[in-house]
Length: 174
Image (cartoon, rainbow, N blue to C red; front, top):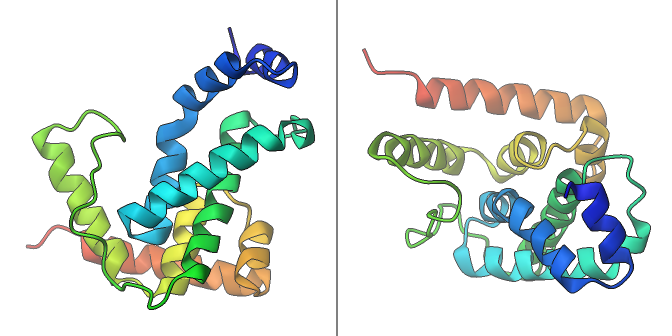
């Protein structure tokens, strides 16, 4: 069954169909929550909030985007809400975060994931949130602007600067 068929069943109250949708898209939503919050506990709370919100708001899903994209946007909103609720905001990722749910990890992938996490942690929060929303949650520039309370040109600037900083941090040392 594809996502559209599962959504039709979900709208009829089929919890098992929703479970299948979640199984298909959970890892990406989890990655968004984790990359925004930098804290496993906050990411878990945000993901739970996102899944609950998705179930409760299935009637609002218009189908303009894929279900996975819609769920990632809900997850990003939940993660941003988790950040707003806590104080102080950590500047480095939680060292005990488990990434095993994201994908099978080979030794090379572990090194790559760690390098990206470290590079993202070095970005300012504004840059980190913008890049995560764009690259992990597939937000449009307008949606990022709305989330961050800035104009679209500032989003473009933040993303450009964040990408340059990440490229520099991830460049091989010669």
